Length: 369
Image (tube, rainbow, N blue to C red; front, side):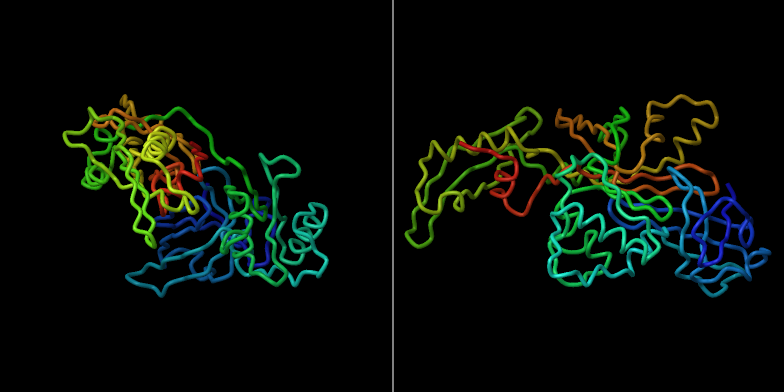
């Protein structure tokens, strides 16, 4: 579709032509990140009939990778070489950014769902947002921030510890003036990427060099100088010409006792068996333009399934050199509004593969010995 320009106070879109069509765009890209930015960036010729109407705060209604969306203009550049650059943010996200949650009544209980829905409805009405809808959560499992003072809408959603994102680990989606929180927004569409064949850039090789395939568990108590070391445990040894051993500090797991070497060895074995240890960090961008070109010209490519991926979808990444596979998630998409197709996707680990400490990973994955 050709994007449409609307006045700044418009709340319904698509039923009329607003201030007119933006028909002379030279480029227009919508970028959306998982639980992050959702913005449009466009370049318009100054010779366009609609050029004089382009102003900050006005709204552009355009097709995105999943549905048509309104975007609030927050930046218009000065003309350079007969062109201007326009930047805009998805409307609900933009409105949420500047809202204030509260002040709350002293008897407000964030775990009381009835009170919370009433509060959110009032906040949404005041800020012209049709507020949260939770999907994938049982009735009593979606929890809300425990705050007794005003918070910005941005912080309430995910900017601080205790926010909705922090307490629910959800994935946000936006539609017009609606904000949705999904337990799992995307799906597995069956796409497969072979790391090292489909991805052969320098960064791919660099990521493989940072992978360890073994751990050496140990315990150390500084005040007494007590040191206990377990036996190293390895996985996937055939994939490496040299074994890559990483230290596993388990001292914090034994604050009042001293473990035996056998206990440390057992924890090390459980750690590499139950975690994502040994899986390379996944973070790379795939340019879909060549794949689209092959499809448009009737070519056959085994990468065709990648063009169907959407934000938060999962895909399998196979590391041929290591002989292992991992799940990756689409964490960013770039959509070409003029060509009406996704031009780039960025993949990342579905779950972080390296937390701040090894002991944190063991506790998170529930390893018990």
